[in-house]
Image (tube, rainbow, N blue to C red; front, side):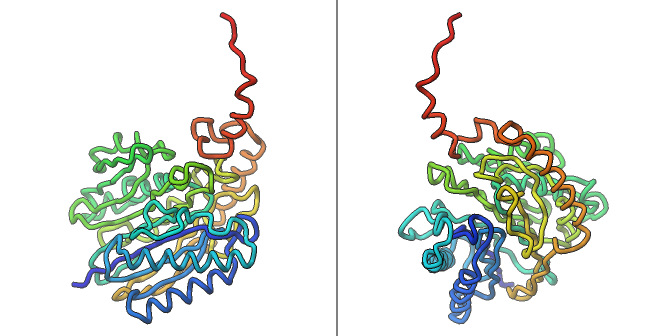
Length: 367
């Protein structure tokens, strides 16, 4: 059986207008680059899309994860789009490209990516989630709900193919280390880390019984790579559904309750992650609130049949309204925590420049 690789690679290479969206010419440029790669046989199929100001490349191929040819293709595509962005004087043109030269792998160079390789099942439903104005840990809550919470995912209780649970690979984004924890037996230990999304993020989820990969996310911390604030990480997530994995509806259900994530304006605020269609994904209010788009595909010998724009459904209207109500409340807090991030989480924002300016004004207090 032929193995298929799904690669989702994204970058912010110029906002239209400000940090809100991607100009159609950039989407056209990316589409032309990937179409050429498909004609040459490198790609089986692809889909070019965006969430907010992030350009997302969804690609299928047979080259495996971390394939130099695929990462080079994405890098060259982002460079070509950056040239278009500069011509249009788009905001922050090329801001996620932290190097001038490709070095064999896109890892550590700015763009975010999630990849997985597997043997395609008889029916292979695949969901791709893309977020804007937030960080990799934003997926912790929905992944926990999808793969470990029986109140969300009934299959964990009633489906014998899921009853043994799943294994979560959690990455420590500060120490560059990882740990694997099984659910349900290590659930409480798992939640210790998932509840701290600014430092810990789920990278992979595996089916415990079969060992099959179930989910893969991007965990690149753009600000840590650059050593300064250059924008939020805006992560992507790939999830396989049905037949031993959560049903499509179980995968989507966590987004019906918009959870709080870090990011929003200047990467410095907490806000609700609002589920939206691609056409609603341009963040406007205070450069937000943070957005998530969910696209569904059926894989057919690597062909991306779709997409289905899941969050365009009326069933998510109440989730959007709830998110907007939360946004109303948080915005009234202005620069006060918990709307603004705590100082410990603002090391890579613009805040240190203000702190340095005032450092000499502080004097010792006598005991």
